[in-house]
Image 1 (cartoon, protein in one colour):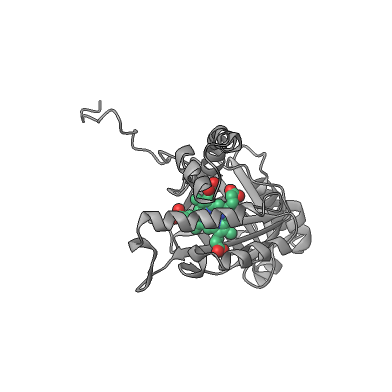
Image 2 (cartoon, rainbow, N blue to C red):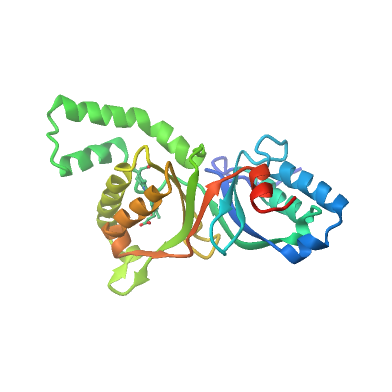
Length: 280
Ligand code: 76R
């Protein structure tokens, strides 16, 4: 029996986050020499195990699971997984390593993070303030309608932030980033009001890409080597460079953003990866 008193407003100790989901991006390279060492039986079984591990419908699959072919030398393919249970996520990685193909799979990069609702997501009141700052007349019916529409949209937008649906668009890019802490450009010593104004400019840039680019920003402060992971999906690959280029001029990025390695790829299921990478 648990005899320790527990304040009633605290959750049970758990691997499940109090808010949001775990998220892992993981990138693999195929070791051709090891692949050649496999017997025909090992290969057949290994490919079956590979398909199972990456099947978003499998019982072992994470709540969200996508896989990608990766361009360039940094990796051959990648998996993106989101789930309340971190061991379910890691389980897929372990299953791949323990499969018959395992010796031929070399993880080259991973990024561990959580979903969150950023402190810069405006409340309906803050949204109204942003409209006013943008020159909208607060006494107009259009103003009231915009604020009402935002208030109605907000719960859905917040659900998308914490438990995102992943778009089915073909092009994806991922990169980790920090907000700088150098003298003269220290994001974390900048007053909230200024950071908030910069993030409003950022959001406006982003919203201009509605229908072309979808983003999921996950937070890795305290979890990985960078502060955020940016995952972008685009209807066409060139929109990826368009949005990243546009944002380079926003103060939040121009002055404060530091970027890690960029990975670019294309959505592909297990069978397409097997075919494209010549695993069979
Ligand atoms: O509704 C809102 O106002 C939400 C606004 C919003 C927040 C709070 C938003 C909108 N983002 C937010 C937070 Mn973003 N985002 C990035 C990058 O390459 C670069 O220069 C930056 C990388 C892109 C491309 C992008 C896209 N965003 C953040 C944060 C967390 C900051 C924090 O909490 O301190 C980071 C690191 C970040 C970075 N952002 C949008 C987009 C797009 C396309 C939007 C438009 C709205 C949407 O699609 O949901």
